[in-house]
Image (tube, rainbow over all chains, first blue to last red; front, side, top):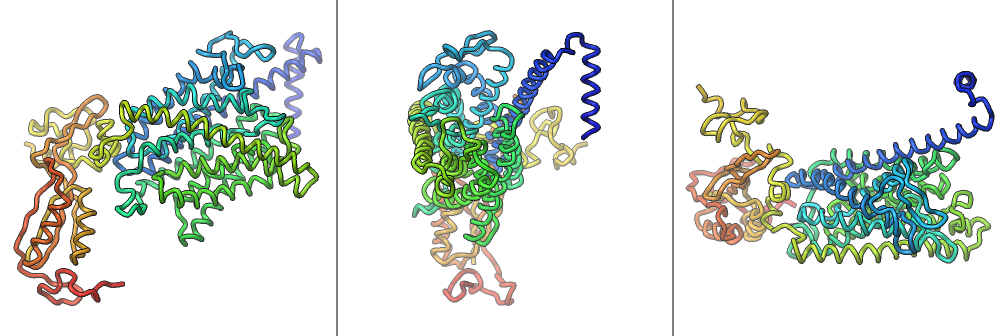
Length: 494
Length: 122
């Protein structure tokens, strides 16, 4: 460590010799400040990439929880959704979310471009490079929120529904909520208290889950999910390894999600957010695993994964506002919530990945947890510390309860706004192009019915059916046709 | 004794199994099969090119019963496997010469299906 410091001093001295003008103390401190801000931007860039990586997490998690006939569609869905969401956010969404404006929506920053004026009055700025980075970071969050929506709809939704809803979601739904909490809108000041949602337990996760609920209510259960008496039956996903891969990718991506929301690497905040994230995820796994083991005496693999996600969702809002000791409690409770919620919801609603529980209920819990565990040292300006500090410390109970109420208001606002617009959008989709595939298509699988191909062809197409190059085999073999040597038809040749 | 072989759609199996069990025929086998019939093949598209798949997934259901039970089993299969569309499948009934239970070595019709409640292992 000392050696490195010595090297830095030597380099600075060298720079002072080489660069004329850098020698003066004033310009040196300016340079350091500029470099620090550039470093912050590099961290935001890394965090943005980590959050985009979460798309792969959702992809594998959902594919793993699907049957083999519905896997290719998961790939297509994530790619198309990310693409549409990107354009919608660039054209409209960013402006509504971040473009100043009134309590309800922003009014500038549409079709984001260089030197454009965003915001009004004193807060107005001209778009430059770093603003583009922050805009991209916002997009990554929007895309995560959208990805959450589809967890409830697997194995039966028509692909067109993704396209239309992605436009509405990326341009309107998510930006409205983001504006209300983070863009200086309605929820950023309620009677002097701001809603504290550090990285989006409600803004991102609850928003996605409420969209998922609206879709599910109009879509209905998968065929065969409930028997004649209405009792739920298990439809096992085809790959727990893929689920595990998805969970771990999401977990890693979450360090960008929560950690990136600091927008800087200086100060103690940054480290606190990162460690809180890890502690809550770990406690989520422990909570969910323990709950399912006590209930069924087996350690369910999928539930352990759900527990990790629930812990992460739970800590998303509090990560920047609570002390280290609170993070495992928040994660553990989220892990318990997800197990009991998945089992309870499964009786009535067919949610193949548990999105309503892991993102919805854990998101609500996380948002409220800020009002319980928020630490004086870390909370936003104007906010009150959590109820915990009123009971066991000397914070004012009335003020703390007020903050908890404000957190609850954020949950209610998010639910009402997202549900209203989502159910209207899905109802419109249902009335026009249709929301759900036909029963025959559902039996055949979404891969072949919507995309004309199988995600795992060998499972559905017997080897002898592949083109072999013989005339009887349907024409010359295309380059790279699979394993002709395996075909019995080839063995009879010449 | 008769062996009833039925080629059916996957989704028809569960209701058939449930009703056969209800009527006292718990012993049956299924084999995942690929077959072709009068229905057309499906076209798979792969990166812009097409591949016609002429055989489709089916289940082959096999049940061996006493002669007198044949109509009940056939009716149950017809009831649940028929959608009216091409591709519902076919049923074949074959004579069976002998049936032997491996565990005990006993033979004949008593080994075929469930005849007494007490035989159900709990």
